[in-house]
Image 1 (cartoon, helix red, strand yellow):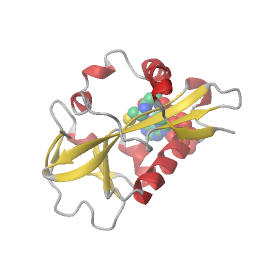
Image 2: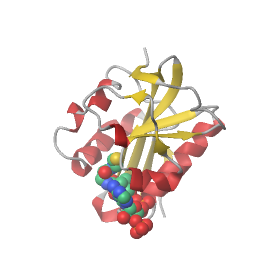
Image 3: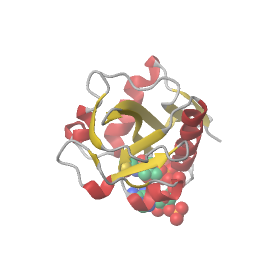
Image 4: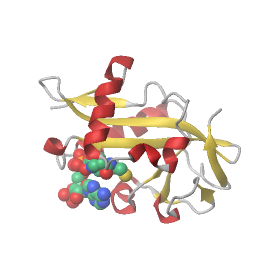
Length: 161
Ligand SMILES: CC(C)(COP(=O)(O)OP(=O)(O)OC[C@H]1O[C@@H](n2cnc3c(N)ncnc32)[C@H](O)[C@@H]1OP(=O)(O)O)[C@@H](O)C(=O)NCCC(=O)NCCS
């Protein structure tokens, strides 16, 4: 029912509008956005989902970050238009993009989000990984794309220069 494909430059403002609709005002003041400033999202992993009429129904983006000296993917934002929420599109966007990330050789993914939702995909609390403040440490979650990929990876999350 939904067509998923990598986001292109032409999609950028439409995706921004979807995020503005789905998130509270001031989303860009969140500390996670400081990790995205001046860095391009990871090409080929950020996806848009369109309905059969071509209307944007959901989107997911990924940025590269560093955790200590290791590389990781920062998942998000992910959003589904309110008229399509609860239809499994969020799951589809997350699972599809994580499969692409694994196939491209990425080893680990992190995000700041709701554990009850992301736990469904295997995300668990990351202890020892420090997001820029203010971030609730309970919401800092990680997933291994390769076995053991988060073992011994700790430290501050910084922008990928
Ligand atoms: C979160 C979001 C992307 C999920 O997309 P979706 O297409 O509605 O999700 P799915 O259809 O794949 O899954 C729906 C299930 O997730 C649950 N769910 C959605 N958001 C949740 C949350 N924050 N915490 C716990 N469960 C959540 C729903 O209750 C539903 O549960 P069910 O399967 O038991 O009925 C979407 O609701 C959204 O865009 N929300 C606003 C933006 C947002 O919060 N983004 C995430 C930032 S952390």
